[in-house]
Image (cartoon, rainbow, N blue to C red; front, top):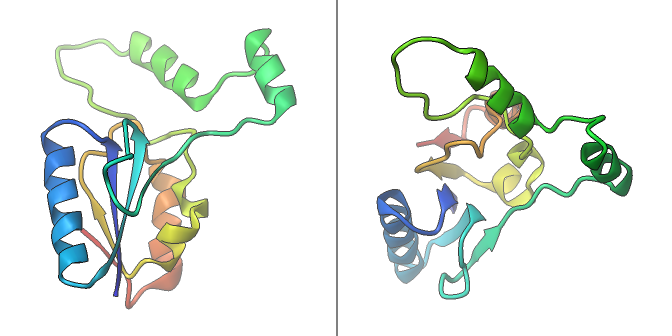
Length: 137
């Protein structure tokens, strides 16, 4: 069984819970991995940070204001929304976890706090195309 835990940060309550689950699974001999957006993974076995790697030409276009990242689009959309509510995250992200080999091979994906990390439309394609036999918690 291959388990992958996904959390935005390596710090905070959700991260502590995710790391605890991960370490317990490793101790039980289960193949467990962790994916984070930011933080320090030096002391977390089998953990990695994911980064968006824009090609050079896109980085130039971003600097010139000629290309918008999804994060920039989300910020602009948030500024247009009126009302009294708390916005945690949009369903769109520049991070394409559906392309991550660890997630593609996982039997169980355990999502903890994934705010502004998961692009839900592309992420859910992993599970739609390979059900049954794959689980997301």
